[in-house]
Length: 224
Figure 1 (cartoon, rainbow, N blue to C red):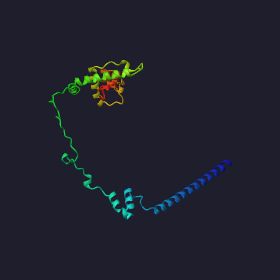
Figure 2: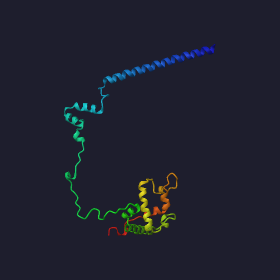
Figure 3: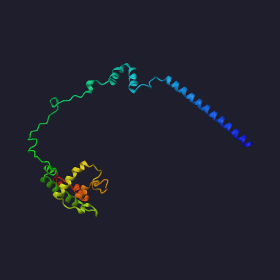
Figure 4: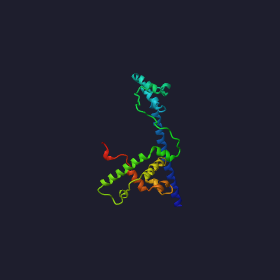
């Protein structure tokens, strides 16, 4: 009996405590609602307006700014939003005049083989120049080094040939289409990232060395 009476007293106290908490919460909510209503009554009614409308109303309060407000918030006209194309007859700038014999100098050749078309731009004379200057620059760099690390690729450098230079130049074209983050990524053997054509034609070290030393002019003749 004593335990039952104690339990009943505890439950009654708990219920009264909950009622007090509920009443206090209701009182706070009612007070906050009243304060919000009073704040809304004191406001200027701009909560539902856009920034442009509010700014426009502020501008209208000042008679001196009426013209500026009308200009700032006026809708764009059809003429200002329409782009007008102009030809060279309306150009007021200075026109460049070619004085030499310009344009294609040779007749077009009916050639569709990609390798032969490539050699029309990179003919043997141009590639031989690149080979000569690349080997010269490599020799200059190696001779200028007082110490070459044991694992440096400079120790394994061999003068590049015309055929190998053609290989490097040709590989630049698929590199423009196959985008990879680093140069070595093209020689990766990972079956997800691999592009087998690169490693099957030239080694990674040889390709990097040629790219590192590739040159088109003799540095000793610069400025002469």
